[in-house]
Image (cartoon, rainbow, N blue to C red; front, side, top):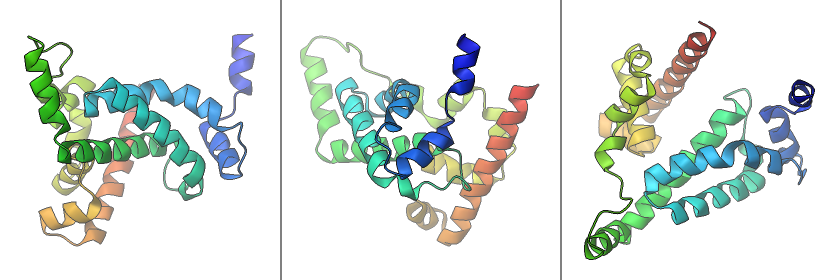
Length: 195
C-alpha cells in the first residue's frame, strides 16, 4: 500500500506547476516535503530557531506569490526551493546583523552564565560543511572560478553582482561559472547515487 501511495504522489515539478496555476492545495504537499529540511538549514545560518521558523513561513508565502519565476528548464523544483531558502536566510541574517541582533544575543548568552545552544560559526564554514557533506571531491572537480563563485554565493551570501565585483569579472562570466558549476555538481552527485 505504501508503494502505491508513493507512486500516486505528484512530483515536485507537478506541484510547482499547480502552484503556478494558483492551485491553493498544491503548496501544502511542498511544505510537508521541505519545511523540516529548510528549517534545519535556515536555523544553521541564522542561529535562532524562532527566526528560522519565520523564514520558513515567509519562504512558502513567497513561493505561493512568486511561483511563476520558477523555470523547470533551468533547475529542479527541489533545488529552486532550497536556493530560495538560502537567499531568504542570508538576507535575513544580513538584516539581523545590521540591527546588531547577534551582538545582543552574545551579550544575553554571557549574562545567562553559559553558551546554551549557541553554535560555533566555524563549524559551518564552507570548508567544514564540504568536509562533513562528503562533497569536497565533487567540488574539486570544478574549475577555480566555478568553485569560488559557488562558495561565495552559497556560503558567504554574495549576489552575482557582488561576486563579479569581488573577483573582478563581468557578471555574465560569474553567471556562467555559477550555472556550469551547479550543473557539474548535479551530474556528479547523481552519478554518485547510482554507484
